[in-house]
Amino acid sequence: MKKFFVSIVVICFFSTPFAMANEREVVGTIKKVTVFSDRALIEQEATVAVPPGTTVFKLTGLSPYIDFNTIKVNGAGEFIIMSVTRQINHLREGTDSPAVKSLKDQLRVLEEKIEEGNAAVNVLDEKRAFLEANRAVMSGNTSFSIEQFKSMMAYYASSIEDITMDIIGKNRSINELRQQAEALKRQINEVTAKDNLPTGEITVTVSAGGAVNGRLNFSYVVLNAGWYPSYDIRVDDIDKPLEVVYKANIYQSTGMDWNNVLISLSNATPWVSGDVPNLYPWYVDFYYPGPVSGMARAKGAVPMTAMAMDEMVVENSNIEYDALSSSDLVSRSEAVTAMNFDISVPYTVLSDGKTQTVEIQKSEMEALYKYVTVPKLSACAYLTGEVAGWGDQGFRSGEAAIYFDNGYVGNSTLNAGSVEDTLVLSLGVDNGITVSREKRKDYSSKRVIGANKTDVYSFVVTVRNNKSTTIGIKVKDQLPISTSSDITVEAVDISGGKVDPATGEVTWELSLKPQESKSVTFTYSVKYPKGRTVILE
Image 1 (cartoon, rainbow, N blue to C red):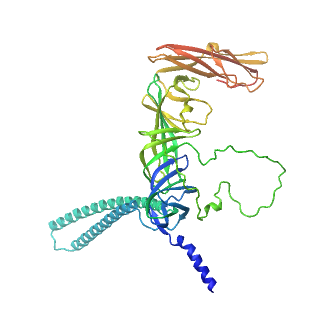
Image 2 (image 1 turned 60 degrees about the vertical axis):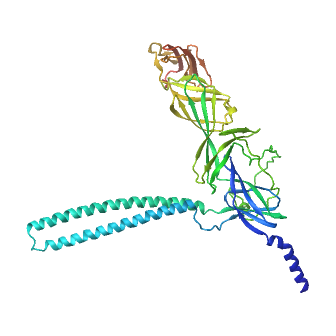
Image 3 (image 1 turned 120 degrees about the vertical axis):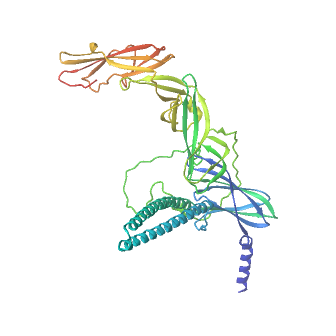
């Protein structure tokens, strides 16, 4: 019995420092967010007053979408970090946030107005019922003269009309108030759904020899956040460079609002290993199907161990992230394989999933402007801009809105994965250039020679420059391509055009002075066995 008592004392003695540790909640301030394409790195700090001995600080109210494997903590002060653990808290107190309280106050005002409106309608209904009852009594009373009866009926009619119109007006107002109340209820449900999410918590155990003040710095990656690029490409005049406005569309529904924080945008993928993968021997053998047993999991499903809420100790928790430089608005920093854009103006991005657009870069790029026409399909001249070296700008794939001469032209897609280093933009139709394609009937014919039939088609394409400047234009047409050895296609006259044998495309490069017109002729023949039909133009 004595040994047992001693054992209990010893256990209690060694357990005392942790069992008696003070536990305190700390409020963290988000200082910076680095947003990647589908996640974000949060940098948060909390000021702490550390008493002597062992203290447990708990950072609460964090996003439930934390990647706990990325948690890093370091301290600034005369204390030692003993351990770092994490957990998900599903038992949040049902307290309303200031936003919810404000919405509920607005809803309460609306409901009071609806109640007052309903009461007013009830009073009017009572008045109408009273008048109708008096009319019935008056109708059966023979003591009234005709004049008195007419006067009473006129009063009744006027009063009933006023009461009825008043009821209609109040019912309309009540319906409008109800619609506003329903909208507020939906908004409250959306906000409370976010507020009722489970929260992440990081617990840090520290030890200090005396009372000190210090700071705990946290960093971790959260999902349900990201950014994607979009562009405005503007061309004021073909004699000037085009302007490219690079924009970031930031969104997040992490469960935490980013209020007035510095934001950095990165095109890196830090969760992908930077090591070159190794190839291992690949063995092939016959397939022998076996019995299916146990439990199957779909490819890409979350492993069951990742769904548990066990605590995890994060070691080597004294790693800090270097701050990125900033300029007046946005600065760009490049690594060997990544590029960051630092926005020096603090932004607020709410956890509502809505996109917030930020302009991150504006640049001018030299472009080679050309006109292109395909008169077989359209009698229009299209202006295009060719931008060389655009891949050096670090652009990501995204949608671009194109503007020419202060007018919206349309949207295009920039493909950053293209191996071509020249970007070709379509800037729309220029009505200052007229194009026509006419069949030359005198040079077109159908004739039979022996066992074969030969059809000859001839066209003339005319381009006129009605502009005040000299232009260059590429004219495109095509030869048919034979898919049978019995059909022979021959270019008879293409006026110096270049033919692509693989596609049959014929191109002419023309230069036209102001008010100048030029024409090219285009003649080809098709020979095939007579008695067969070939459908062409």
